[in-house]
Amino acid sequence: MADGGGRRKPGRPSGGTGAREAILEVARARFLARGYEAVTLRSIAQEAGVDPALISYYFGSKRGLFGAAMALVANPAEQIAEVLRGDPATFGPRALRRMLVTWDSAESGPALLGMLRRIAADADSAALVREVLERELIDRVADRIGGPHARQRAMGFCTQMAGIIVTRYLLRVEPIASMPAEEVARLYGPAVRAALQGPPPRRAPARPKAAGTG
Image (cartoon, rainbow, N blue to C red; front, side, top):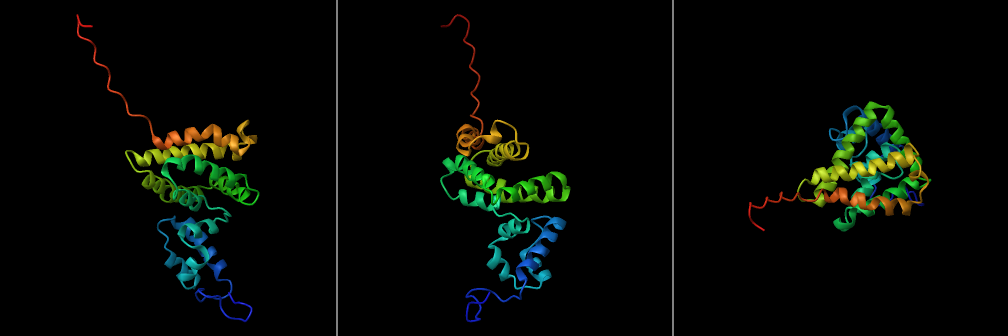
């Protein structure tokens, strides 16, 4: 990218016109064909014929490239990564509010809904998104919250969030479909928090009293 004097923007690696579009085209095809983990940024850059540093320059990370390749204005994996930087004790409600704002947005909501419909109809897209969710969302949440059965609790959190997304945005089930976002957060925040905490420890059964005592 050049400035007004025809000089390249500082920090931008070399790459011809259309490099960003070439990267996205190759990334989209490779992700769908080979999955998320197996594809490397270097292999994408090589096939696109660009400097590998351009991928970091344009997209920041593999997560960012995936979101752009799937035409997502807001990438759920990146948003969760941002929310995870805060206090783990309040992660669930904060993540729920962030998700509601993003899906309710006229800018990012339609693209996310389009992706949801695509993965419901296409097995390859569904497999790719499932792999991304496992590696970039469930695993990261589990690492952040720690403790016993962390991955199961992270899975419970994702299940709660997915249920809200499907009923509110895809199926449009009332009354949740038309609730204000704050009302949804107030009603379902405790369930999301509880999923992350996991079930309370089971109490040992009380021993029966011996005959003739008490």
